[in-house]
Length: 481
Image (cartoon, rainbow, N blue to C red; front, side):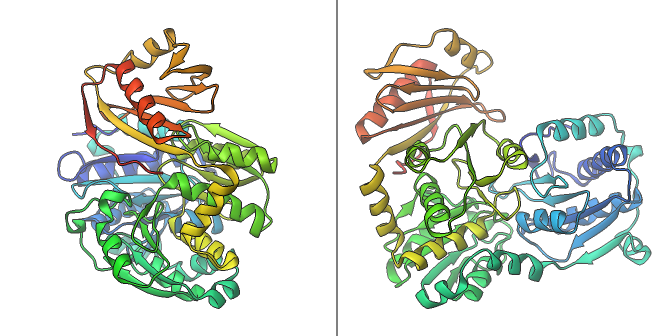
């Protein structure tokens, strides 16, 4: 059985269906073939894994195959965040990295992420070429050794890079300011790879930390490890009964961040990204370009116009953000789902550093997240962002059909610009916008909208649903701002 399709950042499948040991070994052999074709010097790879069912065993199987291909493997000793592996790849000048993780997917899924030598997600071209190598393999082409033999031969080295990575994160913020502020924070690892890392990092920075869901639970106690409002009820309840100023949650592999205010209200990524941007510019005095995906709030553009910043807008997938980061002097990159990357770090999402940066912002301004948001709206005005995931019978020609008949008016507002780089995005003359994008992996179409009024946002979403002939909302999503 194969059925292995590499997409954005790698491959995911259901455990014991397509995500089997045989298929995992095929993927490892495909990665080995790809690297042997392109790396002239000794090939060195970091291998890590998350807290999911059998992730440690799958990671061992990968290391065994890589070692049998005469590749030096730094095998991480315990479950760890994906950005830690990316950091080790870059800092240790390795050829790449492999992480066994289902990220934010339900517990029945697992996956494999491949990290390039620059310490970030591999490009679409890299993933395509690895996919080609895998497709050409037969089961008998896979080379194998045992993990014991690989360790004894020195091909596999047990890695522990916690200290180096965490020290680097702490070096990027003013820990004296944080210690002076001494905020009480509730951390929620959602039973994922952030266990011990998120709470430990903030504790070292000078925070009073209370943690929940810090125990190992391979099925995540029945809650998908995605830090969005509907999955953070436990964190919200804890915030309501504690005196903490903020709550932080990270997803299954700790590269995305979710945030709760001091009374247990969910703070959207569309609110967090602007705050992080202002913090880097005004408090830290950093500079550089801002990179965002098309579905990110236009609040970023409003701030950029006022502060004379350059903004690059790209298609979905963090590897597209990374491409800009590798070519230009970047300040911050962000996507609509709560993944952020920062200057002076790696071109990769990092939920731990995102939490640390927000903590530093509160400390330097002596204000809670709620007060920081009030200041943001006072200066730049409020925007209301929402999205829907809609089911349609066919998606194959949908976007092309929409491009061929772009309307001049949507929800009573004149369309001023139509962008077609990522689905189709309608920019209205009044600043409102509507984005329609078909999912690559699921039979759904995502509709995003933002306006200066809640009612206008809903009207845009309704209009988007009518334009695509949607049959049903399969994933109702609450208003985020």
